[in-house]
Image 1 (cartoon, one colour):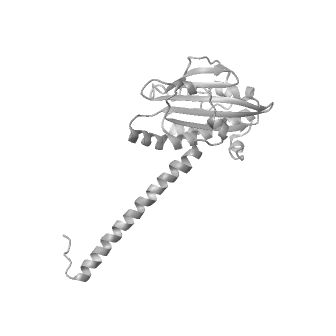
Image 2: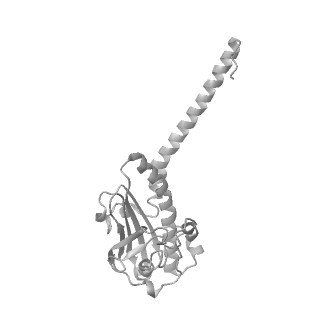
Image 3: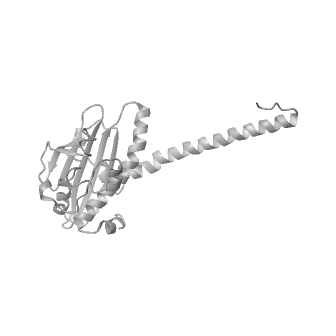
Amino acid sequence: MARTPTSATESRDLEDATGGRWRRRGRRLVAAALAAVAYWTLVRPRLLRWGATPSEVSRSLPGDDLLPEATAESTMAITVDAPPEAVWPWLRQIGQDRGGFYSYEWAENLVGLDIHNADEIRPEYQSLSVGDEIRLARADRFPEATLQVAALDPERSLVLAHTAEPTGWVWSFVLDPVDESTTRLVVRSRVRLPEHPVARVAAQSVLDPVTFVMTRGMLRGIRARAEGLPARESTTRAEP
């Protein structure tokens, strides 16, 4: 049982202690609010535009029209010291039960996706057509984790999509030649999130960091393979 103050001095001490607790709580709330504002206004935009130029972020890419009402978008890019024809085979064999996604295999398999990244061009995975199904995870545990090839322009672009309500995702890979031996690989992800604002913010809070980490890893992984470099050397290079 709380002791009743027996003097004016004790009453003032109790008021000071109570006021101090509230002030500390207030400072923590203010700090948390400022951190949230800094993340959403400064950090998040940089994560979702990693490596991309302003023109790459703002331009229309193949697949944008498939999900015009997208509620979230990321555009990330990397320069590859190889022509588009050297990058394209790695994109063409993408998929869980194909060549993998060239990102952090250990992280994907930590949640049971069963991803195995190929380090060579696999002829049996080079056949790809519009309408083909691309698995994102093992079929027995994640039967609905699939995208379809929505558009394919050899050595130029590959669009994977799932646009059925209520959510949706369009994943576009674009190869822009810089010169005869250099390519810009641009990856755009457009998603339709739940309509409820709380659910939408919660989804973005989880998806955005994951998108940044895994897409950056994929871009670096594709670059390493297309350039014929060890993955370690490619990931430690200065980014353009």
